[in-house]
Amino acid sequence: GDSVTQKQGQVTLSEDDFLFINCTYSTTTYPTLFWYVQYPGQGPQLLLKVTTANNKGISRGFEATYDKGTTSFHLQKASVQESDSAVYFCALVEGNTGKLTFGDGTVLTVKP
Amino acid sequence: DPKIIQKPKYLVAVTGSEKILICEQYLGHNAMYWYRQSAKKPLEFMFSYSYQKLMDNQTASSRFQPQSSKKNHLDLQITALKPDDSATYFCASSQQGNTEVFFGKGTRLTVV
Image (tube, rainbow over all chains, first blue to last red; front, top):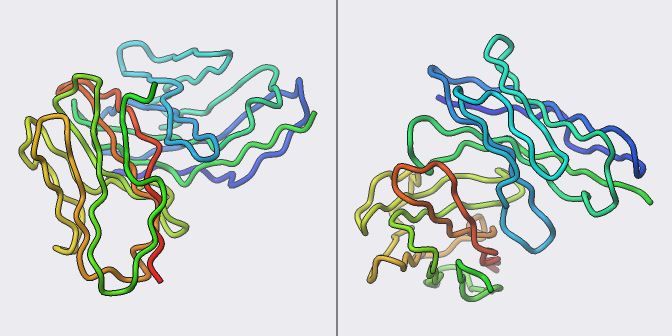
């Protein structure tokens, strides 16, 4: 079945540092890929969506590129802020459904 | 204003009892879902409904029963509760055929 792997359980940075969160996936087709962000006490919120048609997503300074060769979808941001502290989930969906497969999440802590 | 309303926010239940988690969405979506988040599995798909009909069920136990009385409602009935059912349950929705899924704030269930 489908799977998503986020190897980094926790990332701690200082403000203005560069962010890189690793995500790789495994499916039998070319899925749509997502990054969701979850703040304390909230549900996951869609941050980025990328399909095979557009390859790259950019939102709120975050960007991720769909790499079919390495089956990766890493999240990057040039300069993080304390307000970016949250849990980040990589996810995929096959077809046009809402059945998402999530990675285990990466807890990002940004120190002032 | 929250567009996906989940009630209650917190719920404590006794082992063996039955509870109903409420979900209403005001996004005009015709597909609704339940996801579960626990320490064992950060975000896990449970059910999907489209036009009030069950489309997919990834929950092994029949103790979990979704109920859709209106097209913007999808409640979750859980019977014979076990401590292992303790988790945060998220309701979500999307437009059928669109992969962008929106989540509610969740109901945190604790079974003692």
